[in-house]
Length: 337
Image 1 (spheres, helix red, strand yellow):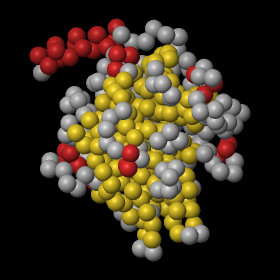
Image 2: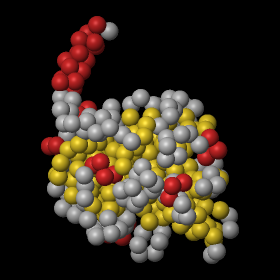
Image 3: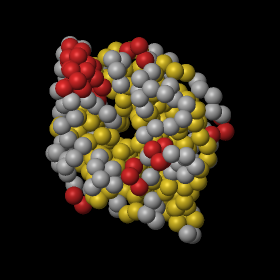
């Protein structure tokens, strides 16, 4: 044990000495605490009253939960899903077709210990998955069946809804699996579409984000780079680029994509051990700047660019904080426009 402590001590001191020296930007709202271990947020914009929008956040544990927060950071118990076996990452999508006349917004998250995806209708919080959709069924080892990251993609070609899913460990090729959701008289189903995505073999892959409009999926190969692929399955599995790694201290973590009507936008990526977020151009993927948003050890983050209320007049950026909570920022504080 003493030897292990001696090995860890230099690493701890090194990381502490490399903490951000940039001016700290304080959040506008800090949420109420969760019970276990926060990880990843998703933002649902209310279709009729943006001030009633909801931030969902995962709380990882064998008896974990998907917490629902209002824009003041208060827990909405009626919309919180409890008793989930290690929920990891979460995403939302709008207008999923149930039948010819019924559409719903959906919340989808990974349930790692059950090796499956879960899907709920928003705002009713009604399960649509008959208990869950299994993932990585052809994996040869148990650890390669444990889902972690997830991002939803709505195809502009035919409006199909897909989930792109990462896992705790995986092969050097085909680390991510893509599934298509569809509904018929028997309910919602999930069908495997493809496997794709390189992995360096270092650390793991968790953070995934999709730019629906431009059709790209980005994911963090934590110790190496941000990898970029086509999200549309019929556009192939070749890697487009692997970029940004030189701007990170250690782990490359959560990715949020800020999009604007002009076609401009930014990737906001957690530089976890540095305590910063690196900003990259959405169009060129070139590094723009770094920000210190005063969070600790951020895993997941998310952003929307529409006004929500008097606090979040420029949009909302949400970051996980390693104190069992989430930080909310008016997007204007990030100085992106």
